[in-house]
Length: 218
Image (cartoon, rainbow, N blue to C red):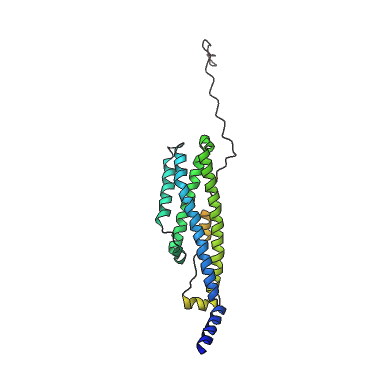
């Protein structure tokens, strides 16, 4: 009897000190982070096809292609696991790599602006729409992660739940900072509504038999 009373007392004590809150919010953080990783992977999967389509019209833009390919390789070299949210240094490295990927894709989209035929290519337009949709999903997933981490971190730092956190080893988790938010918050866009500039007319060729007018002074 005393055993069950002690167990009941401990359950009530842990509940009052935030133990159940940690169980819930920790799972929410994991789910939110998994969605962030899922959307970043979706973007990475689009990159090879997008680069190949642009290459078909702008093969000489080698520097841009190299930058995109290398940025994707750096992203792929980092193990994107749920444990990243428990390692501040690894988390920031991953986010920095994603920021470089965003910058490289923005340059690739700017290249497309110079090629009207590329912008009219159906496959390119489809890939660009998928990329823009994915960037929007990344923003939504990232905001959800920020919100869930905020709730979790407040519980870790607040009394008396901080005592439970120390007892069971719960620590604050990293979130997006102002610096890396600026780097990745703006999705690359291409404005297909702007008409291509009209080509300059070629100078008229002289009609055979016409005598050029003499220059002044002669």
